[in-house]
Image (cartoon, rainbow, N blue to C red):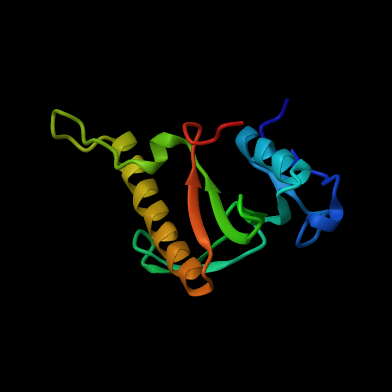
Length: 146
């Protein structure tokens, strides 16, 4: 099985956006898509349809962030709640630990850049969601329970 590819929603009426342009970029994203598509609690969902502007401190310019998912779901009380969800490996959500010998290795520098970029995106997403009374969440393999 490929780790990326097109996804065809079964419940097209629930997909907010173009249902012929849905792509997963990891098996975790594919699992989420299947769950959102099949769940009765999910009223609407979309994948990479929202663009959030953010300042990238690495490139020193404004860029656009396309979060993995938007969902509108019913909570346990039957109220509708809207979420923006990012799916990431757990290691990319934690600040990298510098090498013990004090030298800045390529791998550490790459991980540090990725972490800085991710936190910049997530800060912008938090603000975007707060303005709309939505919730922003980062899901990892440790937090997904399906």
